[in-house]
Amino acid sequence: MRFLLRLAGGIDRLNMWIGKAVYWLALLMILFGVYNATVRYLGSFIGQNLSSNAYLEAQWYLFGIIFLLGAAYTLRTDGHVRVDVLYGRLSPRGQAWVDLAGSILFLVPFCFIVLWLSVQWAAFSWQTLETSGNPGGLPRYPIKTVVPVAFALLLLQGVSQAIKSAAVLTGDRRPDADGGGEGFGKVDTP
Image (cartoon, rainbow, N blue to C red; front, side, top):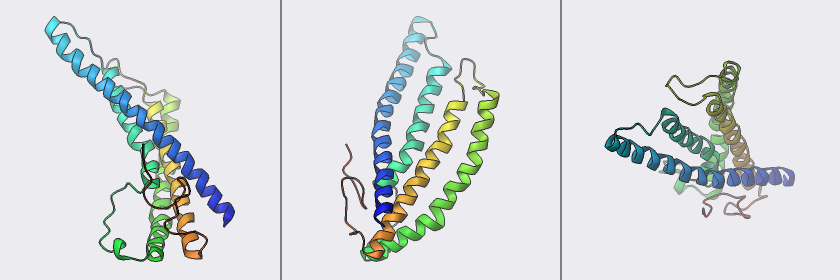
C-alpha cells in the first residue's frame, strides 16, 4: 500500500502543479477579453476593424483549456459540486466507501470512454491539420488535443482518489490526512 500511496501522492502533485499553472491562463484569457472589448469599441469609433476571429477564438480556447485541465485539480481539491445529503452524514469510512465506489464504477470508466473516443478525434484533426471555419481563425488540432490530455489527468486523479479511499478502508491512512497536498478533503488554494 505504501507504493500505491506514493503513486497517489505523485499524481496529486502533478495535478496540483497543473492546476496552479492554469490559474495564469485565466489572467491571459481576461487580457484577451479586455483587448477584444476595447478594440471593438475603439475600432467602431475610428472606423477601423482592430479585432480578428483569432483573438476571439484564443479567448474561447483558453477558457476550454482552463475548464478541461482544471478538472483533475478540482477533483483533487474536492471542489466539484457534491450533493451530500447523505454523504455528509456518513462516517469517514462510509465516505471512503462512497468515494471508492464512485471512482471505480463511474469516474474511471467514463474517463476511459472519453479517452477512447477523443484520441481518434484529436488524431484525425492533426492528420488534416484542421483549422477554424472562421476567416482568420486558429488551428483546431491543438485545442482538440487538450481533451484526451485532460481526461487522462482526470483518470489519473480518479485512480489517486481510489487509492486514498482504499487506504482509509484498510487503515493505512487517516481520513483527514493531508500530507502536503496528498490527502482527502479541501486543500488551501493560492
